[in-house]
Length: 494
Image (cartoon, rainbow, N blue to C red; front, side, top):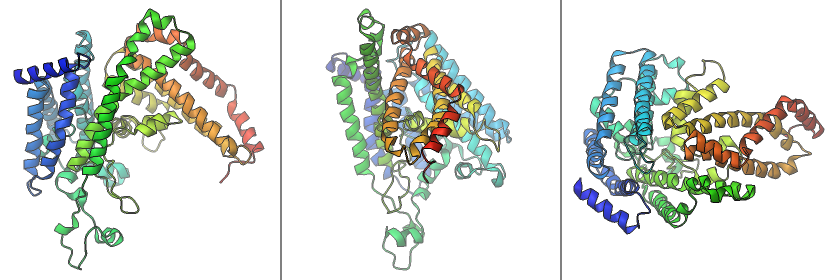
C-alpha cells in the first residue's frame, strides 16, 4: 500500500497538483482493466469457477492495494451475503423489498457519514462501489423473485432476466465483483453475467448461420461450433482512444470553468447573458470526467466480451450491452426524454425496470407518482446533499412537461401545413433542453441549498421560469388551441 501511495504521490506532482490522487488511482485502475480483460477472455471456457475467482482476486487487489478501499470490500461482502440470506429464507414479494430497503438504507448511512464528515468530492470513498452494488443487489433480488413467479405474470423483460433458482455463492460473488464493473460500473443483470460466463451469450442457431455465414456449415454443426465469439479489440480501442482524448481536453481546459467560480464576486459582476453562458460552458466541461470513466470502463468490458449484444439485421456485431453514455445522443438531444436516455444509461435502466415499473400497479400506465418516486430514489441513491433533490425533483416536473409537449404541441408540426417548420421545432427543443439541463446541473454540482439558490438567483431562476410559464400555458387551455391548429393544418400526416 505504501508503494502505491508513493507512486501516485509522484504522479500528482508530475501533473502539478492539478489532479487529485484518487482520480489518478481510479483512472490507472481503469487502464489496467484492459490487459486484465485480455487475460480474462483467454481463461479456460469450461472452468467457470476460475473466472469467478479471477474477478474476486482482482477486486481484492484493487480495493486493498491500488485504491486503498478495504472498507469497500467488507461493505460489499456484508451486503451481498445478507442479500443472499434474505432471498434464501424469504421466498415471496417481501424478499426484494427487504433487500431494497436494507441495501439502500446502508448506502444512505454511508452517504450521511460522508456528508457529515465533509469528505472532499475529490476523494473516492466506499460510497462509489457501494452505489454500483445497490443496483446489482436490488436487480438480482427482483430477478430471483421473478424466477419464483408464474411465467404468465411476467413481462418479456422480466422473463429474460428472471433467475430460476438461487445461484451458487461463488457464481453470485463473481457477478458482484466482476472485474470490469465492481468499482464504478457498468452494472448489468445477473443472467447477462451467467450467459457471458457459460458462453450462451455467443450461441447462434443454424438459421442465423445460414443468413450471415458466421461459420462454414458442412452439414455437421456440433454444439461446440455453435458458439461464435467476435473480436472486440477494435471497438474497445475506440472507447479507449476517445477516453484518452477527453482526458487531454479535461486537463487542458476543463479546469478553467469550475462551478465554484459561480460563487465569486467576479461572476456576480458579469452581465446576465455572460453568467448564463458561463453556467452552460461549466456544465459542459463538468460532463467530461463522467464521459472519461464511463468510456474507459465500457472499453474494458467490450474487450472482455461482455459488451457483446448480438447482431443487427445485416450481421454486424453490436457492442452496446453495457454502454453507459451516448455522447452524441446527449449533446444533440432535443427533448429531456432522449437526453436522460443517453446519460448514465445502465442506471436509468435500473431505475426504469426496478423502480419506475415496479411501483406502477399492474395493468396501469406509469404516471406522475411513478416519475416522482423514481426521481426521489435516484436522489437518495446519489446522496443527501440538498442540491441533488433540487435537481431531481425539478427534473421530474421537466419530464412531465415534456410528455405534455410531445402529446399536445408536437403533432402540430406533423401536419401538412406546418411540417416544413419541424426542423425549427427540433432546434428550439434542443436549445431549450440544453439550457434547462445545464441550469439544473448547478444544484447537482454545488450541492448545498444556499449556494444553489444563490447562483440560480443570479441567473434569475430562468429555468424554473420557463417550466412555470409552460405549465401555465397548458393550464390555460393550450390543448384546445393546439387541436384547432392541428385541424387548421390539415390533421396529422400518416
